[in-house]
Image 1 (cartoon, helix red, strand yellow):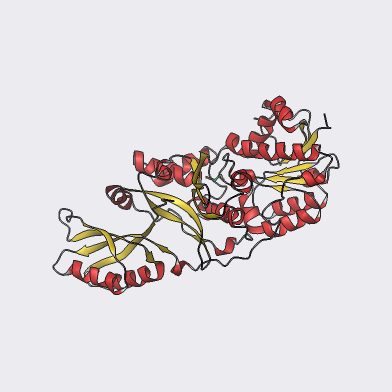
Image 2 (cartoon, protein in one colour):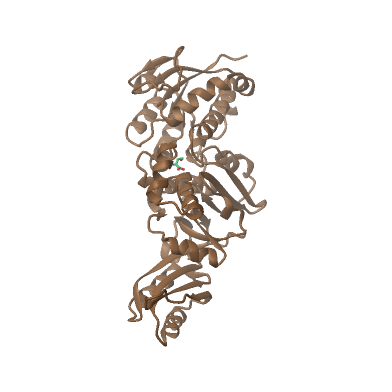
Length: 436
Ligand code: HSE
């Protein structure tokens, strides 16, 4: 058997401790699968974690000592963030070490430069754990689906948000209360606004799009909207219309460019994706040969994420155990011939829309509304007017449109908000049929 793969782990938080412990727990299995023993020889962490028995490994308070350690062949970056983490990954690559990371923000925002640096130094930068926790989605796209042109993908790619939406819907729990539980369970980001405002999902979406379409990482071009403005009545009305609201990341190839967008979305209740609840993630991918395929599993947490980190380490063990460097798998999103595809402006993106408005209960309101839609060439799929609540003069009017250009919908909405008969802003949520 080849000599062990010597690993340095930086960061002993939720994912770091999960990875450290799983490497020990599954050591025999991993050795059999990788063809080499996966040995943690150095741990860099600001403080010990009582969940980990670090005896047998060198421990440094300075994580850069791990990147500089000549014994270490692979640095596992699990500290998070984009500043120190970037410096650490660059230092490791420059020192000729492979890097495994779970850091989606780092890959999404600095991946183009980091992959180029990895190519320059003939090392691998691997990131299976960065997207959708334990789901092997990078492998699915890079290996299993490599015979397909990917048409589109849509995913529930933030476990915290899905957990919050599920608990609020099923148990009527309060937003802040569920978020606090997600933080305590280690699902949420250090800054939970990244979860609830959609930034974390945007990080993951841009990596998925890059893998799916062979384009550079364009994080700055993702349209990002979170779940903080969702109202309970919209969840209820969506259900009445046969839909479920999920927070989705969507990437689609069109003739005009690539759609990159993250937002709450109504999807038909009968779709499998609509039934993925709790902290689970799922990614639906439409390939031109295979059709739709769905990948589902735990999207956050110590052991699911560690599972993905270990998959990368096993691959590195297999590759580095081989004497032939040409056997190394493709490096990542920056290798090969990337196509600099344009990203479609959101006003040109087409989808059906759910619109809710509060109208004064008087004659002519409906005809005024429908003529504004027709002026923009928007046809109406469904329209509900609720009876006024006792003692109130306003009624909720819910419209679901057919497929329409966002620019036209926004023009119609502006005109509707200008009507005397309409009170306040119109609530606008996109709808996706996802019937690939
Ligand atoms: N905060 C992330 C989530 C963790 O909730 O999905 C996994 O990336």
